[in-house]
Amino acid sequence: MKQFAQKFGKFLSGMVMPNIGAFIAWGFITALFIPDGWLPNEGLASIQPHILTYLLPILIAAQGGKMIGGDRGRVMGTIAIMGCIAGSDYTMLMGAMAIGPLAGFVIKKFDDAMEGHMPAGFEMLINNFSVGIFGMIMAIIGYYIIGPVMGVILSILAGGVQILVNANLLPLVAIFLEPAKVLFLNNAINHGVFTPIGITQAAETGRSIMYMLEANPGPGLGVLLAYWMFSKDKMTKDSAPGAVLIHFFGGIHEIYFPYILMNPLVIIAPIVGNICAILFYSITGCGLIGAASPGSIIAFMSMSPRSQMLLTFLGVVIATGVSFVIASPIIKMAGVKSLEDAQAQTASMKAESKGLSTTSAPVKDAGKVKKVVFACDAGMGSSAMGATKFRNRVKAARPDLTVINTSVDNIPADCDIAVVQTTLVERAKKSAPQAQMVTIGNFLADPALDDLYIQLTTGDEAVAEPTGENTDPIVPTAAPNRKIMVAEGIKLNQTPGTKEEAIQAAGELMCKLGYVDASYVDAMQEREKLVTTYMGMGIAIPHGTTQAKGTVKKTGIVLLQYPDGVPFGDEKANLVFGIAGIGDEHLDLLAKICEVLEDEEVLDTMKTTNDVEWILKQLS
Image 1: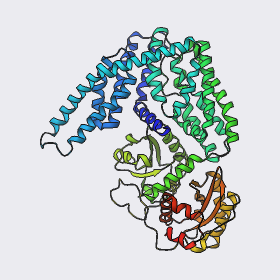
Image 2 (image 1 turned 30 degrees about the horizontal axis):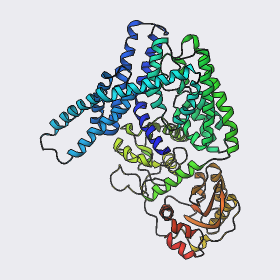
Image 3 (image 1 turned 90 degrees about the vertical axis):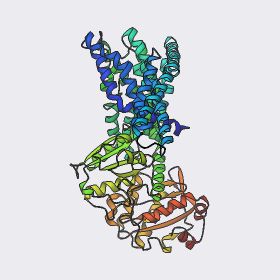
Image 4 (image 1 turned 60 degrees about the vertical axis):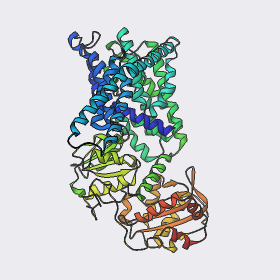
C-alpha cells in the first residue's frame, strides 16, 4: 500500500514539477502587482487571473497527458482540460491532474489498437482526426462530469477547512499532511487542494494561510539539521549539509523524505514542528499573497505581505526549532540505520544478475564523457541529492565534467551517461537513446556509482564494447576461465561472534589464499563503517573500500558459514561472503549468488550444510 501511494504521489508530482516555473511567475506577478503588492499595477495585475485560470491547468493537464500518451497525449490533455475549466467556477488544478492522464490514456489505447492496422496513405488523416474527435469527447466529459465533480470536492474541502479554522483545529492538518508529503503527495495536495482554497481566501482578505501549510521549509529543515548533527552513519551525516541547501534554498522538500523513511519514527518531528508553526500563524493572522512554489525560504518570504515578513520568518524558525529538538534524540537513540541501503544494494545485485546494473562495468570512452545526468521520476528529489554528491566527488579530478539532475522523461540530448534507478531504465532509454545507461538501486550509496567515479576520473575505457545497441545498459564482460572460489575458501560451522570478527576472519582468509594484501582487511572494516554490507536474507558481502582496490592481488571470494548467525545491526548473517575483485572478474559469481537468493530452499540448505563440494557446485 505504501509503495502504491509513493508511486501515485510521484506520478502526481511529475505533472506539477516540470511546470514550477509557471507557478513562480504567477506568484511573482501576484506578489508584485496586485493592489496590496510591492509594486501595485492594475494593468499588469490583470495577467494573474488568466495564468491561474488557464495557463497552469493547461500545463499540468498537458504534462499528465504526455506522461501517459506521449506528444499526442499532451495535445489531448490540453483539449480535455478546457472542458473542465468551462464547466466549473473553481480553479481546475486538481481537475487537470485527473483529466490530463485520462486523456493521454484514451489516445494511447487508440494508438495501440490501430498499430499494424493503419491503412497506407491515411496515417496523417487518422492521427489528426483521432486526436480531434477523442479530444472533443474528453472536453465534453470534462465539462459535464469531471469539472463539476472537482468543483464539488473543492467546495467540500473548503467548507471543511473553514470548520477547522473556526474551531481552531487547523494545526491538526499537519498530522495528515507530513506523512502524505513523505509519500510524495505534497505537490498534489499543495497545488491541487491548498492553492485553489487559498485563491478563494486571498480574493476576500488579500492573503491565505492555506499557502503556508505545505510550503513551510522549517519542519524538513529541522530533521536535516538533526541528522547533520547527530547521525551515527557517516554517509548520512555527510550528505545532510547538501540536502539542507537543496531543501531550504532550493525548495525541494522531496530531498528530506528518504531521511524520514530511513527512520519512520522521525516523522513525529516535522508533524509537531508544523503544528506549532500553523498554530503561530493562526494566532497572528498570517498568510501569504500567493502560492510559495517551490517551498524555499526565498519563495516563502517573497510571497509574504510586507507587514508580516517578520512573523512569517518566525514561523519558519519555530517549525525548524521544534522539529530539530524532537528529531535529535530519536536519531541519537536509533544508532546506524541502513535498512534502506541494504534493500537497495540487494535490488542492485539482483539487477546485475539480469544484466541491468553496471557495477564494475566499463564505460565506453570514459575520458570523452562531458555530461552525466542523474534522473528520477520528478527530477527534483533523490536525483538532486545524487547529482550534488557525485558532482562534489568528481569536480577536483574532472572540472570539465557537467553533472546535473532532471526528470527521467526530460533527459537532455547532449547527455553522455544517464544514472537512473533500475525501475526507470526503460523510460530513460526512450528519453535519451544516445546515452549510456548506469542503473542503480540507491542515489546515495551504490557500487555502480563507485565504479563510475573510478572510470570517469582515471579515463579508463571499456575493455569490451557493449553488445547490441548503445541504448542498452552497460553489461559486464564474462569472467576469465579461472577459479575465484575454491574449497579452501569455504569455512563451515563457524562460531558466531561480532560482525567485526566475521569480517576480520573473511579478510584474513582472503589474505591467506593470496587474494589481497593484509591492508585490505582494514579496508573491509572501514567499508562496513560507511554502509553495512548486510544484504538481507541472512547474507552479508563485506569488501574493501574503493581506495583499497590497489591492494587486491587477484580476484577471489571466500565464504564463512554461521548456522546460528552473526549480528549485522538488527539482522543476522548466516553466510558471509568476503570479496576481492579486479575489474569485473567477480561479477559472474556475484550473479550466481543472486540466483541463490531467489531459491529459498537452496539458500536455507547453504546456511546449514556440511558439504563444501555441494556449495561449490551451487555457485559454479
